[in-house]
Length: 312
Image (cartoon, rainbow, N blue to C red):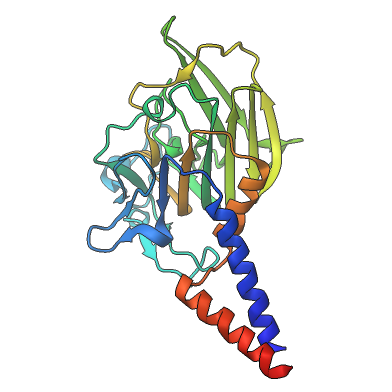
């Protein structure tokens, strides 16, 4: 029975690896579990574009002694600090992750990347993130999650409207900005991620969050843990639109003074195509399955087969 159980586990690992191998190559990919560099304290990009490194940054407590709009409610300086790298086996389904327990942010360094350069005239794009959002998550002012924050250049898939002691609402939204080169005008669509008034992003749990921007069908589809949770449609004719090029950055989590806490980050990727539901499910399975190294998988499979032979 032990051999059969071992072989079953190995088969699941092989299937997960096979499904993942069929995925298209992301243009951007930051995987804390696979590409953390302890010498530089950065997460290396393994996508097809040279888009720089993700670097955890400490929050600036000095800038927030009395934040705008928080008069009489200063932020405790002890709640600021650099994000902490947590190795695999300690959380995130045994994946390594960056723990933003204190007010902090993650910067994208060494890159002049913009979404327009990555996606061009693609028929759509897909972004995938693996995050933890605590019920006590707080954001100073407001901030992008997975992209920089700025008016008219939020090519992002998550955005927090922010919170304060006087207004503790921590609403997570999604923004998509498209650029029309013929008119030099911006078109923005921002949707609160709720269904029947209820937030679709679970708290106090690790989740895969996926945003698919399907230009051909003029839809934005949101997935949580491999399941479609919401679809929105464009009301504008986007013929001829491209992705923004005004210094947009996919990768950052918060920026400078726009710190946040109560967030865990393990994976972020962007594809210059529309992923299918099957591919999204394969991504979720890979993120949530502790897959051994290939050599270990081979040994386990051989050991399982040997045990089964001995039982015959």
